[in-house]
Length: 435
Image 1 (cartoon, rainbow, N blue to C red):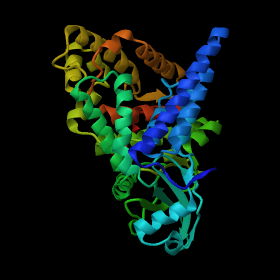
Image 2: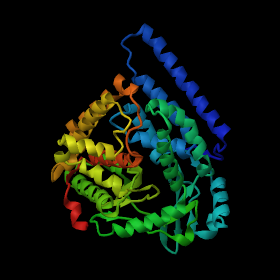
Image 3: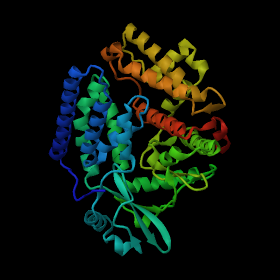
Image 4: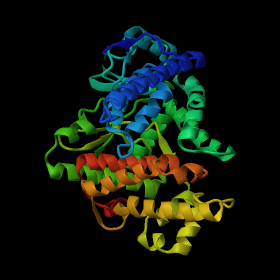
């Protein structure tokens, strides 16, 4: 794979790259509509493939928060066209890596030595490269190690990247007024946390210790003396990425076992720790030869305050969903309904969220749930498509919900998709034995 000797870091350089990408996408649309005049039966499949290719090619060399957005979108399988999901999912663990000279320069700057002076052996070529950093193999004192190296300039470009994305996101999600700023501030703060490897090391050690009793769950050991704010050293864990395992696995028992571990891991964090691994994509989990689940990345941890946690999970129970008075009260507590809403907006959003929550919270309505249920995921996809075409929704103020929804909903959406990939059938109450 091609390596990179530099990454665009200034606002002008990054804006220029995004502008070039926009020109290519515009050209794809012109070609599509020109061809459709001649062939009215032409579908958007080829257009989606071309756009996904060009957008990904534009983002992969920028890395950082621009590529992180693609990674987040690749988790949205029910709404994004498949061509985008397929292409953007590469950003989870397969993008152009830094060249060996740039890697050595990073070590010298942040650990004061070149890698060959620190480890007994060090592979100059990365084994995985994603949005914020890449991973190299090393050994020291007989131990196999994984070394995560952050790309230069990632933290410094987050604010400018989001400033470029903000106008597009504001139109896409119909955000109006000053209240929309809270969502962008939430994203910026979490992305900045992900670029702080000292914080990640601390979070990794705390989370692996807190969750050590969960069956079939493993974590690497981390080494503070071999780490810095841009370099993180941990044990090398043998296994394949969850998506790779799921693609060939035909053993339902293995899928159920892994799914149960995944569910217990997330429910224990959510309900006991009130802090959760908020980046559940396949690149952050490995499966070893004994079908153990290995969690390898704790850069994105979301704290769940009680004022959000309590009403959020109260709305996961059918008794409250189906009680109009209490349901309405919880919508206000979660900032879904606002004091300045018109009667029309109150009626509309109450109906929308009643339908949405009645469907999305189904896994919490009983003691067991089958995440291989295609009807469940098909219904989510159908509802998502319906909302994207809803002209009335486009006219409403899109500032809906507490800022905490961004990462908590992302967590559950990603979790559901991972469990669906595993075709897992889980006991939704089993996590309580670890509480």
